[in-house]
Amino acid sequence: MKKGGIKIVEIVLLLIGSFIIAYSVIPRIKNISSVSKDEDMKVFVKRLNEAGAVFWSKSLRDGNNGSIKYYPIKKNLIFPNEIKSYELHINNCGNGMFNIIFEKNIGKKKYLILCKDGNNLMLPKFKLISVEVKK
Image (cartoon, rainbow, N blue to C red):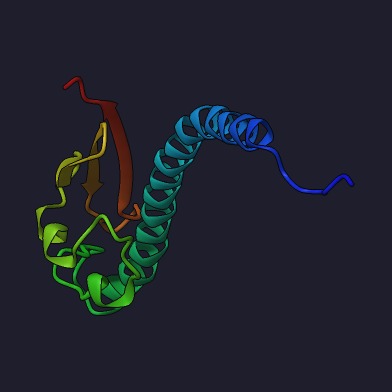
């Protein structure tokens, strides 16, 4: 009489196969999370530029020559998990040149957000720079 069931050899082979698959998949998952951080930061800077355009028009209307430095932009944004609102210094936007308003190491990259304030003719502009950090 033959009984059905799983033999110990089959269990060992199943475990070895599972470990091999896990070993090859885990580095890919880590890469996906770093890509998603990059995308989060890019989307955030796009949202900064959109909000900057809205507040630029309000600044012109209010007679502030297009400057957005003292408008409540941060209250109108959804921040990614990596950025706290107090870390973003909109009031440091440069007049006619880009200044750093955010700087932080996140994972293996250093992220900088630069800002050039608006004026009567030009919208404010935000840029993202990311640099690999060697540890």
